[in-house]
Image 1 (tube, one colour):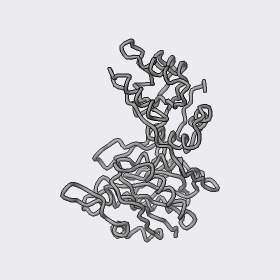
Image 2: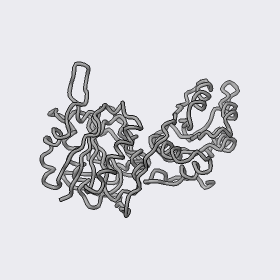
Image 3: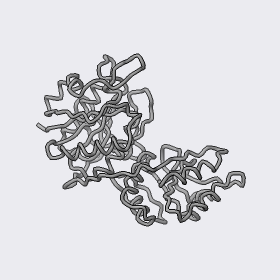
Image 4: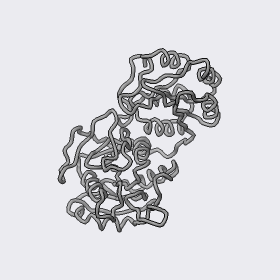
Length: 335
């Protein structure tokens, strides 16, 4: 049977009620006691790297998590990471960049309700995750949640309370898990060996545009960040009204070694800035990078990974547009 290491980080799945609300308190060994059936198809082991509410996750936590996987990589056949749902999509994305081409599965899961409750999704999510991590056809980074297998670079939390918390954005589910069976929709091709990365540049910001926003906010972010992601409307564009001089503000930062990426607030189908004048002129004038069909979580994490390696604009652009773990499928013909 496969040896699977369960790495715990806290989150709702490991929480108990306190006077101030839920807080992570359940140990990794205690969690395994709730799913004894996994011993029928794998040999589980545990490692607790930290115990936090996932709202408190930082890039330092991500590096510790990736380091723990690297340290134990040769000893186990797969990994199951128990994580809070609030930032799980970010963690799935960042691990897809920090641990590339893993021939072994790295499965991230959690729950909307703690594992010690009678009415909980934690037991089924954890069992499904061990099952998927034990399959010889599994590889790479993915989220397993509510019977669905979602590519790590394509996941987004779309429900705050329901058990179907996550959606796969602009990409099909890899598989579903029903009654102990894995039904695969997209076969995965395992690589020969993984590549691990060990640094991140967390100086990345997001500015969500709203009607009437002062462009001074953009100026502040560009001054204090190495990269700014502009979350625009629809297919992507920059306000061009004389009352809101965003373009003039951007012009002040051209040539100052800042990375600026345009994405969209719309969850599905992605950006395409050349469709409308407000997008095409901004893209051409300021040489903005465009996220296309990437999730915001993947854009953030990919920039942190890239900027830890280079700040050269040409190299940043090349690396940003290089698909990794199926994070980017649509590129306009002009690139």
